[in-house]
Image (cartoon, rainbow, N blue to C red):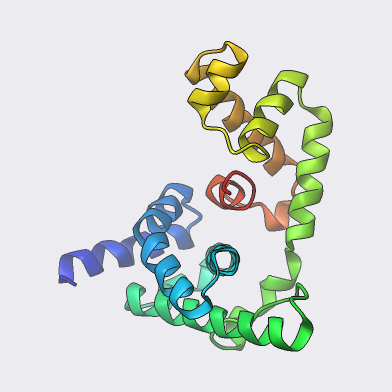
Length: 197
């Protein structure tokens, strides 16, 4: 890896540490594929790979104030992913796939993690769906539950693709508004958890 690329990645981490969601999305776009491949090699399961990838990026965001100390982003992210895979294997072996708090590398990363759970996010989704307009709720359900693309939804409902994209974006914002302030997540994480199959 070139020094320029390392510098750019370090800059991304610094921006994420300041709460920059665009930088977080850029980091996700840069590393999600190689980290997913690493997790799949270790876990041999698409479902497990996706769960680990979600955990890695959720924890990065929740612990973003500690990112300033990371010198080599690539190796650090791979180390976290390997650790999460091992934790996942231990968890499924010892607790029969029970959901629980997973540890990252060292005690300094453990504190904020108990404040968020997938159940909290699922509850936020349910609350948001209750107050969404029927059309927006339908668009959300076609995207999430049927796995349809925005173009497919637009054709199915007789709407423009842009309208559907805007409705999904508004749905994400509505879901975020129902999360407690202390665990407010960037849209990319909610997309990971609820808009990808």
